[in-house]
Length: 163
Image (tube, rainbow, N blue to C red; front, side, top):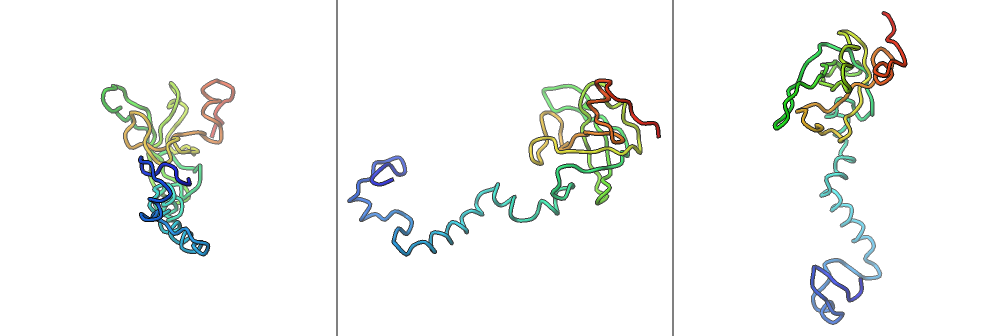
């Protein structure tokens, strides 16, 4: 950006020589530029989240995309204002680390396919650890029940195995 726009105002070549550009521009400035970039990248929320290593500690899944759990109970969670509904969810305990989470059960009537003590496969809800829509505090959804996809049960393609 030689002699171009900077900070919303036009900067001429002569003005830059007196003002300075805010960063080193010499032939031997590479190391300085690299170290400054390395330090300043930590100001980015996405970079920090990816590189601090807290996703393994804080995230119930421990960095993985899916996780198996055992259903403890079926719960209804009230939707946030201005909506009025009871969203069908399950409380599940993850097998890998014993953490208890609430997971949303998608589709109409799919809660009927899930019983207590069933093994369910749980995935994220699509917002990288944020609650979605009007369901407060629910960051996960149920994908499979007893090894059968919930959508297959819903569309009557498969039946749940008798246990």
